[in-house]
Image (cartoon, rainbow, N blue to C red; front, side):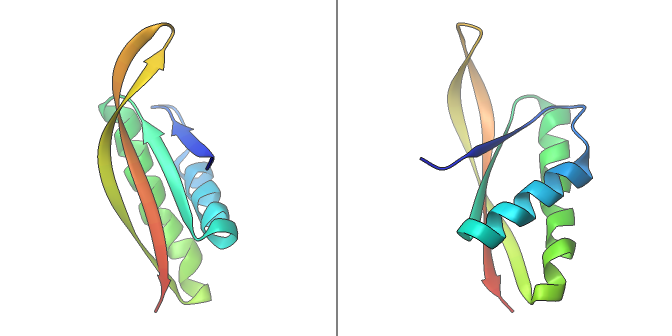
Length: 89
């Protein structure tokens, strides 16, 4: 099973970007999950910054968003999951 990077509203976007870039380098894709508008904002900004991190390697990225149900502290919550994929420029 792939590792899912969980992003919170207070997560540093450069840390998210670095994690996404690292996952893409190793696996060719990254799974990023966020709950709430501020967390989703951080996740999307992280994906955008990861694009700049990967540009020197002639890689570009795009993401596919989807809603997923996840259990948090015994309750079902709706999260946004981004599948970030890369290809050679």
